[in-house]
Amino acid sequence: MRETLAALAAGEISIATAEARLAGYATGEAGRFDAARETRSGVPEAVFAEGKTTDEIHELLDLALETTGRGLATRIDDDTATTVRDRFVDDRPTAEIDHEARANVLRVRTADFEPPVLEATIGIVTAGTVDAGPAGEAAAVVGEMGATVERYDDVGVAGVHRLFDELDELRGTDVLVVAAGREGALPTVIAGLVDVPVIALPTASGYGYGGEGEAALAGALQSCTALTTVNVDAGFVAGAQAGLIARALDGARK
Image (tube, rainbow, N blue to C red; front, side, top):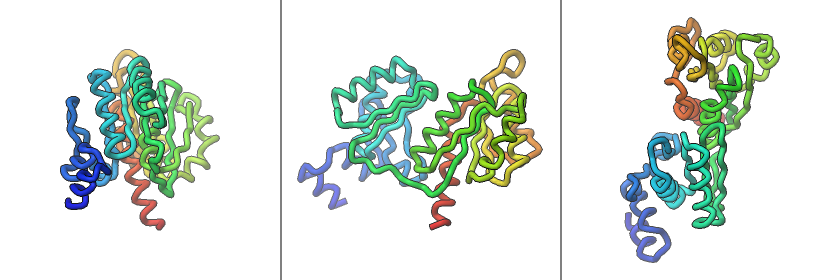
C-alpha cells in the first residue's frame, strides 16, 4: 500500500491505477472496471458492449488501458466500434487498436503492453461459416490469454469428410472449442474421435423449431461423449474455459 501511495504522490501512477491496485477495481461514471480479474481468476476482464452507450464503452476501455494496459470489448457493433476506435486514435494515438467485425470484438492495447504467452494450442472449430461470430469471440479471448489459436472452419457433419481431413491436426491440439448450430452434432462427433478436452459452443444458427440455438444446446447437453457445454453463443465463456485449461497445461509443462 505504501508503495502505491508513494507512486501516486510522486505522479508516477494515476488515481485510477492507484484505486485499482488498492481496491481491485477502478471506478468511472460508466461503472467499475474489474482490473484485478485476471490476477484473481486467470481470465482478463472484458467490456460487454451490448446495451452500453458509446461513451460508456470508451470510458471503460480507457480505464482498462490505464489500469491493465489493454482493453477488450465484446458484442460491439460496427458503427459503435468505429466511433470508439476513432476516439482512441485521437485520445491515445500510440495505442494499438484491432476490430474484428465478424466476431464483434474490439481490442485496444498500450504500446508497451506485453501480452502473456502460454505453451498451449487451442483449436477453434466451426461447423459452418455462420458459426464464425461466436467462434471468433472465443478465439479472441484465447488469444488475450496467451495461447496459440488454430482455426478449423466449415467442417460440419453435412459433409463429414471435411472433418476427417483435419483429424490429425485436431488431435494435436490441447483443447478444442467446437461451434455448431442447427442440431449441434459436430461437438459430439469430434469428441468421439479425439483424446483432448472438447468444449461445445452451441450457436443460434438455424430456423424453425429449435432454430435459435435450443436444439444445438440440447444436443450438446445430451451428448453421449464427454463434453463441456456452454450457453448459446457464449463465445467468451468457451474461450475463457479453454484458456484456463491452457494455463494449467502451460504451468505443468514448465
